[in-house]
Length: 553
Image 1: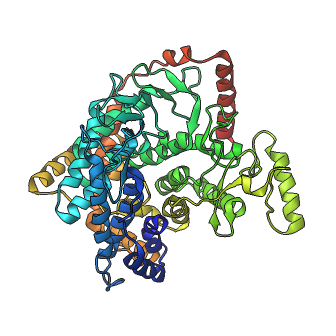
Image 2 (image 1 turned 180 degrees about the horizontal axis):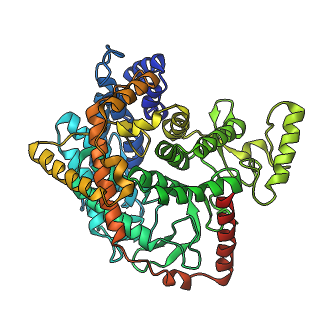
């Protein structure tokens, strides 16, 4: 299916790689097809393949002068792959099965896990299917995605939390663990972005309620008020379910920053940066106290989530420390992850390489000194591996497609002056694809959206953090911004109407979420404390001291 190529189409355009884009279009026309007798993961194909095709098509359609020979092939391919995914929704509840055969449709025989899907897998379809409906005039795609997202919201617990996985035939929760990490993560993101993209106020209300419940119920125990991370807990009781943090949860600050929750985003992002400092990379799973890595998942898989948050926080605050973070992460990837044919994941961050992020943390100063001496002697940064461990065991022989669609993209954008304004003109999908916002569907929807916006403007007078989104745009300043963006990204088209639409919706989102959070009572974390051993509590206290020290330095 050439997933990496399809996933990276808009990256070509962002980086002004016109010849590469033209070559990609030729290859897609000649070689890419989906008539394959193979089982695929519905969620992954939607966000990587369908999303890449739709984003590429929309961006090319808006820039006909740059690609006058573009014939709509990407939309044709998008329709084809979507139709092949359609049988996955033929369940008793309308929730999609996790897998489907691209040629034969719904799997004829299901194993014991095939009728279970994760919350994010079913709930992260809104942007791609919504745009497909808008482009084809066929409402079924948006309706399928909306039904799935709303069905899971309707099954939230009395604490307002959703679980990690659900049975698509019975709609019963299979995993009742509430988390901001794997299994749920992008579900929250797409409820918010569905509003920013389409103006779906119901989805904003759903996001607001779920966000409030997460921020209330997934806080760490009360004796660790300075902890940076949100925890995982049982959706019914709120009791702590694990003491590990997933690197996938590092997207949360980016989401917070989009709606103006800067203070909360900065603090949480700082926690993930602490993990980078401590381990040299951001491990897949690491302890809340930053003392251990999950032995079952100890690697770094070139994940983009923390880098995305870093880019968006830099765009929001212009704080140079985030630029410095991007430089250091870029150096790590170039020095330690780059191999002959691309970039490789690290199998184990404790054995694959030594800590070289900020020369901080226990024992890392000596490590840095050793590495600096070796660099001086050799004139470069040598690969360090553990004695007795074969070279191949340190790396995974795979470069995930999201590395080019997200990781590299967010790093690149961090260094492009003024690129933060892209957030005013496009919505980034969960796979990092640029998608333009959709205006209200009709006059009635436009009138309703205008009313909600005016109410938000009035409310913003009491919520200073929302002022930046609710102020009337300055035409002169906006024209200068468009000019700067056009110089930086000459293959993209920028429409002032898109910026006004996204700004208005961010104003509404900011005021609604902020107002809702102001009305939430403080969480009772005593239930979580009952679940922790004294050893874990001690580790928590050690982490608090380290985290506060790193913040102060």
